[in-house]
Image (cartoon, rainbow, N blue to C red; front, side):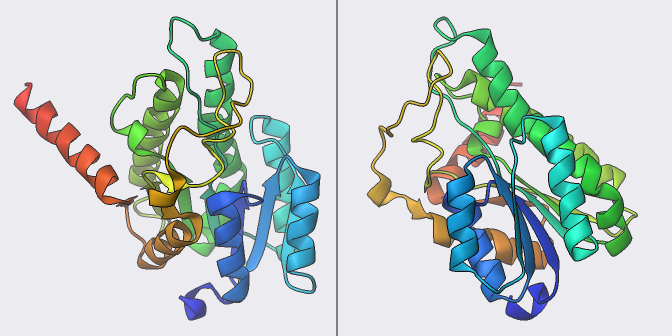
Length: 254
């Protein structure tokens, strides 16, 4: 893995926390030139301090804003000369029944999880095609099965999976690999920052983080799949079981 990423330019959204930060750490140690963005300037500064003197470019950006996506991608290309790999990792979850949730919350989730990926990919596409690189979207098992209390989140991930599958087909002859990843339940910050019915951070997770895959382990699985140029990656036994059972019952129900 170290040899593959050496001197490659990798742009990762949401790299100041959880899985994204774990990927940044691994890629930097593998000799890659890394660009990442996040909404928290202090966390990005801490990341810069950790990797002082190494090729890391950071910028404050909110991927729900098209202009921020454009600035992140263009500043990465200006800094490193192009992009080999784009990892659309930034995301937000939600926990609220549809009867209780405000519509703006679902729109916010869609803007971050779906349109953030669409916008960053659009601005990076020409460079990635030129370098015959890779586009990765971090999705979820919720993109295969609608989860109660996660209607907006599931919708955003269904949209992401469908869009990336279409994009992969469009780019088959270009030499670009398109992959979507479903981590399953991972001990990352996304559940702690999940939005409630009013669009506010819930600030806690109802799940036992100690029984979940770590962000570092998840990051390693994703990066190994990038090296192998896989189409999809579903992680954890529970995640694979969910995807399999969904396909099975879809066939049986016809």
